[in-house]
Amino acid sequence: MPKVRLAGTVRGEKDPNREIRASLIYSLFSKGWDINNSNGNQQISLSNIESKIIESDAFVFTPGATLEDLFKAVSIFVGYQTLDANLAAKPTVVLNSDGSWDPFFALLKHLKEMGTVKQDYTDYLLLADGPDEVLATLASRRREGSPEVKRLVVTDPVKSYDLPLPIDHEANICVFCSASINKTPYLSDGYNFGKMLAENHLGCVSGAGNSGIMGEVVSGSVDAGGWSGGSNVPHIIELEGLPEGLSSFWLRPDIYTRMEVMIEKSDAFVIFPGGAGTVQEMLALMIFKHQGNLAMKDKPVVVYNRRDEEGARFWTPLIKMLSSWCNDNEFAVVEELDEIIPTARKLMSADRTAISTPQCVEA
Image (cartoon, rainbow, N blue to C red; front, side):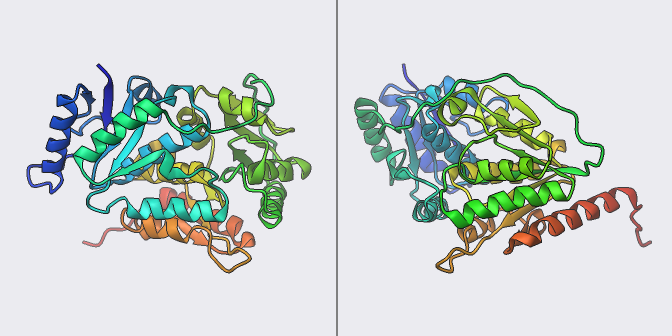
């Protein structure tokens, strides 16, 4: 029988979404679906999420969206975008009867308007208002298949390699950003920021994309003589190639372990204008912070909320969405390019001071 992975968490016997989840489980089971995670208690990590995708034939997200649910949903969408073969012909339905998913879809709509999401996300993350509609949507999409994401294959994958850090190296800054945006002002920002990193003796860690802002950040760092490391996966390298001049490259099998190594290799993170993949990465950082994951210990996150030519701030919908789950001190927001490095340095210094300075407790 086909297997559906049910997302969402059951928060005790008084959870308002418990009844609709029970109805959904009954409907799915009666129509021939086996159900993974019916109790809503299975833990997903960056290391095991791809295996959960492989073992499933469809995905259903329930009301009461959490930060983890948003991460899983956007990860699946990014998988569709990047032609992850393990997601081929596997539909995803979001049951949004309580409206808790509205900020997430508002963010994706904003990114489509900004040009960093090219696909119609509603063709891949299918909305439903009730259990019956979930079943009907799953049935029709399994018959029809998902819309094809057309991408050009340009190169072959390479092997990992590592060069030592420079003697004057201070820290690594990971830049999460768009690999598809082609607006000149955004590309110039990326190139100039890469140069700034090198000039400040800061390593540049990226997703090792060859296009968009991501490619420009790496080019700026390399052209200025900086150290630049990155990670990517075979099926994306085949689509986009790798930027020239990387000091180190870490090949990984999927986009989740790719994020994992980027987080481990970095001392701070900058969220540049980007698309669904950048949202995925920001959510992963916040989840790691909430979990107390040592890979994120004392590592600041800076969101570059750039103003575009029409006056809109790029990440305002993301910041608004995260306000329901994140505290003010979990990430900083800057609005000018030249504020990013001073802010990151100040936060890194503050974290190190907090580690080395004993805390006084009043009797």
